Image (cartoon, rainbow, N blue to C red):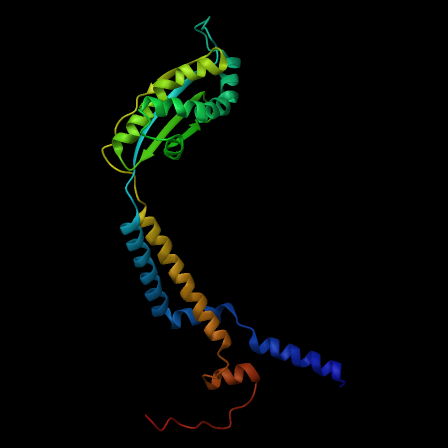
Length: 239
């Protein structure tokens, strides 16, 4: 047998020796289940505590505007083309209502207590799918502030839409209200994510420690890895 054949045989043998089956991994995890549970609980608990202590409650005020692109309604029938046109134009209407010019008007309406940047951080404007309706959402640490900003937006929106587009109109579908309770802080969800992350970290640690642990832990492992017969065992005299 030449040198190249011996090298190939040795590489194959080493590959067989270091290969870890799925069953081995499962047994590995079951052996150290207590470590997985402990780290999962620690990380999950720490995540829950962190978000519970650092998260600031926020309140939301919402409203909905119906956008009509026709300056005058000439028929009581539903005009499919008009509705389709309005739906396609909704992103443009949203951009107008997020523009600095409009938000300056909202800021002036609120006696300049909040800058354009402040208002931008509070508001979220979304087009409701397959409709010509815009959903307005304002979030703030103060429920009354959220309500005031939302009210100002819906009060100033009709004039701004008419000014920019030279026609069309808006109708208020849902009046803003002052929230009586804060939005969910999702502390429970974050705790679950932390629990799963902790368990995953523990599994990776166990796997890596066992991968780099080259010690032979039993005679069965010696036989299975190297195929060598056991001639005898030295008893543990400390027991």
